[in-house]
Image 1 (tube, rainbow, N blue to C red):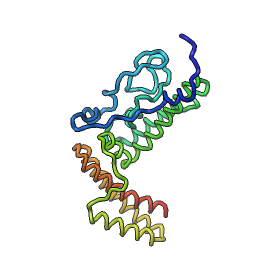
Image 2: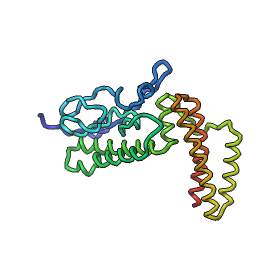
Image 3: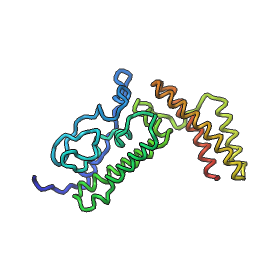
Length: 235
């Protein structure tokens, strides 16, 4: 095999760039909406070193020569972590998968490798960390799923629910006026119950592929989580 030529910084960055996924249309929904898996629709990609096609179910390393690969196909967080593209993510399995990839891709394991492999390790590890941070949060996970449908959740979007809006206003006043830890913990328990109900609404919307309902449920959860953040800041 010919000696590996050194890569320029721009070339390394180019090879490490994660591609954005194409937006879905009503006529052609994304593969995850049809199969609910994260790997069957992945196109073939050849290993940069041995040129053998890389199995996209395990795209971080070449199955033949075992070389680390650039994250060029990992179009979304589910594919990066190699888990099914669904709202119902098993938290324990997600964490276990994250830790396994984190260990396998850690830059320290490539300290004596080529500059190319070191760059791929940095990029892969960064992508895994970012994907895990997204998927471990129901709100961020829901937003990621909506984006795969071509729906960009609006941060400033309101909700047409007088009861929720009244709760938000009253809760903010109570958080600001409460000084005792016990009082704040009571507010937090109530907030968590509302959070669980909002997550259940999200789960049902995604299970039924009702995207508008899912987007509305995302807005509800966003309001509730903001109250939770305010409570935690005072605890």
